[in-house]
Image (cartoon, rainbow, N blue to C red; front, side, top):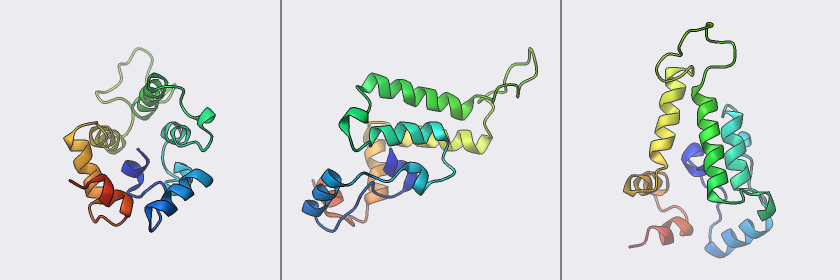
Length: 138
């Protein structure tokens, strides 16, 4: 998710050994530090998934899924008091069309499928790191 949202690696190093050492010894940067305009609900999901201490991460996939769904609602629902009493929200929720489109694009790009792998290949397509080259080796 971090890579899909930022177009960069969570951590990067010239060799796989250095990358593994970096991952084992250094916390990753917050998504908010890289993308300050990112919605706090999305930042919370990603940052918790990448927490340095495993005890601070999501306890299981269901818990993370629930948080992703909540973040999605935060992106697409109108803020409290924004809708008139008795009025139905416009199709697509109260978020701006651009914000909703971006959110849908992120969701579509991150699906576990050939499409998701192709999106990762686009991000990592240059094979700029040893990890990317070994991950997509056929």
